[in-house]
Length: 172
Image 1 (cartoon, helix red, strand yellow):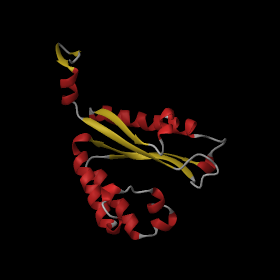
Image 2 (cartoon, rainbow, N blue to C red):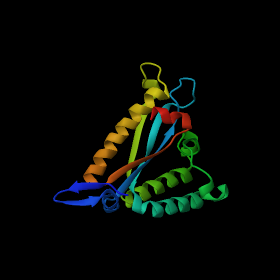
Image 3 (cartoon, rainbow, N blue to C red):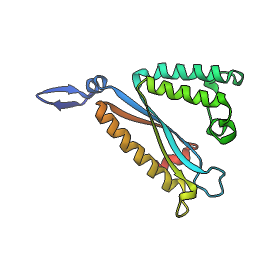
Image 4 (tube, rainbow, N blue to C red):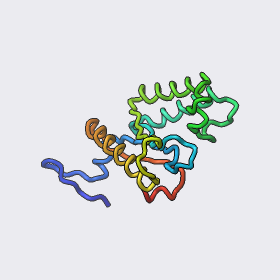
């Protein structure tokens, strides 16, 4: 059963309206912790937005890049890229890691994607913070920008987030 929505002088079902409108998905992941005792120097919530219909192609191409740049790590779908393994100073000195990041950036751009990031440098915090305070601030700013992008592109937006643990869901 579908609800009916008034649009102009006619009516359409929500189901048909959703099918007619393209969906853009913002994929987010977190890195670092606000705890001063944690080794990270920043608390980052970052990701990319891409149209849902091009995501399967994008995903296959990223898997291909993982396989090409890191052939000894096994099946590319069985492991996740971690910032500590790619962008920290020592790993970043390896040209393979820089080239992989450039390839992912190229894929996002060529497939009409947009990069997103909200970063809090721990050295700039004026008072102790927890994930209960940092995550909502970061997510709010990213969601507001994503909403503006979706409106400009006439897309329905959806946010998919991969937190470090399910206990962080309550803060989002």
